Length: 99
Image 1 (cartoon, rainbow, N blue to C red):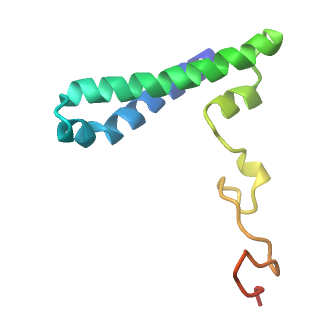
Image 2 (image 1 turned 135 degrees about the vertical axis):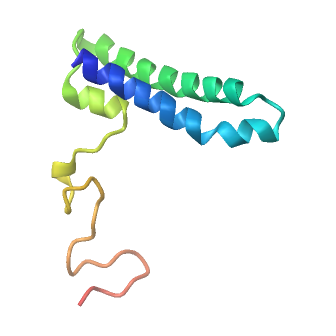
């Protein structure tokens, strides 16, 4: 489980850093600095959530790890892909019922 957590933390860093590369140049910050700051901030948030979950009982369950990374359980969704789908015959707000 530790290896999985480390790989997921690296993925959080990369995903967040890549998303901010252009933003730093708009305000005069180097690409490397903006990527490092964004990635480090995202990693710190995940590590904090993991630490708080660990403090509760001295253990980390897979549900606590997934919650720290904001991962939804695909088994609990209608399509199995992690995205909630409306139930047939039930309308969303401001919509007509499904036929």
